[in-house]
Image (cartoon, rainbow, N blue to C red; front, side, top):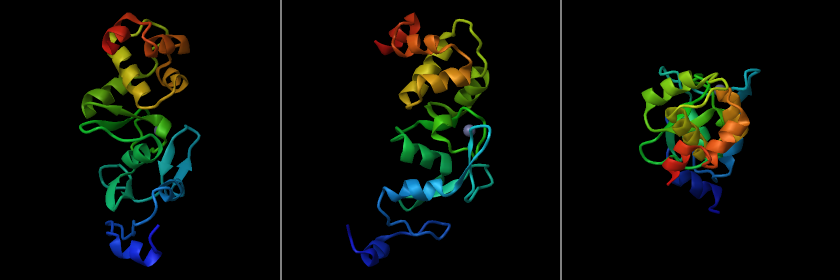
Amino acid sequence: MLPLSIQYSLASKCMNGEYMARPRGNYKERFLNRIVKMDSGCHEWQGQVKRDGYGRFCYQAKTIPAHRAAFLIFKGEIPEGLFVLHTCDNRICVNPAHLYLGTSQDNAQDMVKRGRNWGRRKPTNEQVEWILIRHRSGDTQTQIAIDTGLHQTTVSRIVHGKNAYARKLMN
Ligand SMILES: [Zn+2]
């Protein structure tokens, strides 16, 4: 660990004036100081919010959308070309359980809307794909079942490749 004075001199400054040469582990604490947990289950961002409706957080000397920061801090890397999407349609929400990776912003958000209350019907191929993406993003079967209204057994069959289409996608 570098002495604090050197860390600061190496730091670049984020737009909101915060210095960011801090150990990686501190992101968590700094991030969690800026959220409020709502009854809805959303964790709403209390820090800076831009006109696009998304929060902003200073991460590795760059100001990035707060929900992307939440994903990086609590779930892991965001592969090139993927978007961090909300299951809750709440842009200032940074609850990692409400975030998943998707390939296209529009399609995926549309999918989320259609994804609500899928009921107990057999999921379509598109829905199977969406469930696999969310599971790969680190979401639990329980969380996916809650968001979709599907029975957890159905979600479990999909993520374990017991659904024919899921098996095809996995091979
Ligand atoms: Zn939310």
